[in-house]
Length: 188
Length: 343
Image (cartoon, rainbow over all chains, first blue to last red; front, top):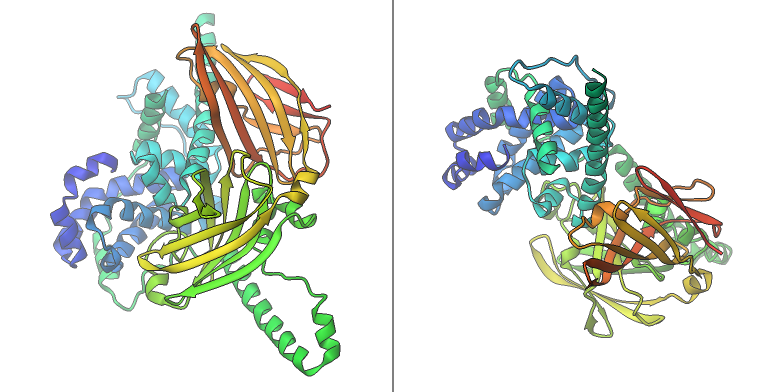
């Protein structure tokens, strides 16, 4: 989603969705489904929960479409709905949040990319929910600090503080793993 | 590094197997008017607090009414403490526990209602680090109540608050947080001042907009740091250490009832990263009590360049409820810990 979605969600489409046009709504759902599920998955870390949250978010979006006053804020508004749906799902099934699947290496991945991805995943699993949300909004959804704070429902300072804390733990994990890799390489 | 994190997260997200879109199901549920939109952030804990709050108000009302009937009950009523404190709600999380326990905060309980929206200032605390204001906002208007998808019921961001001292606007950094209760929000605002305010003054709070609703909610709240100043202890450790290329000197530490205020000086080569170098992961006292939680605020008081070195004076305020003056504080960095002795 993020910035890429801007290419698809034109103001005309937003107007049509808000006026209840089911065809535009379907088009929007089909284009944003994968990104919405992945956003929820990064927060919830469970595929089934992520899909359920995304589904609820799209349904809520349609049901609450008349509440959106400023169509220019559609993107932020949708992220708010999506994040709230993920939070609700988390509350329903909090114990499924840290289920980690078996690592499958994509043949297209380079080894260092896979290591980075695994290190990021492990670090994110060890983060609190709030810190994880801050990272996802910043690095996956491509939101500005101000937008992310609005989406998360936090003050700007709180968001920045949580992001800095999460980022720092991630950086440390990446550096530690990088060091381990380097040592292994030298030994070999 | 930011790019690396971004790539890592995006690649990780790509590992999530996305199944086909359950469009028929989405369509059916979206068009089904009998199914309401999912409630926003239903938080049972907040609801319990909301119900408890309502119950207390009812019981309190009954007791006060009975006070008119019985002089014995009327006498007993004077002994009942005011329970509608937002500070109690936030307590330890925002470093307010000591303020509550030691009665450093002032109970205000002033309510202004306009356009059927009531804003109540419940508590205030003023010390060397910050001014903390507890508030509650509620409405009986469902159009406003469900207006937004934010985690609180009524949009009242801190940008809509305007603070004044004797008519002069306060431009210091402020931040806040809010939690949803049954028909509104409770929250706290923090104003991180720079220590230049008088010991006692009247704080004026002006709110002209709540959500899309314009109105006028004006308050004048007397604040004083007389008692918090008496409980504040200042130390001059002048302790120096190096973090990477940065030399850090802790010049002054103030242990306030609800904050720790630290004055640093950092000296580092021009262009070195600021935030990564001197900022400890957390600060704990000699008992291991983690005092670096919740809100915090750091500001560069002054900066200058001498030769090829940047010299900054930095002030950090940490929300902390320390029960006693510690012998030392531990500044924990990723690779080392530094003890700062307070003597």
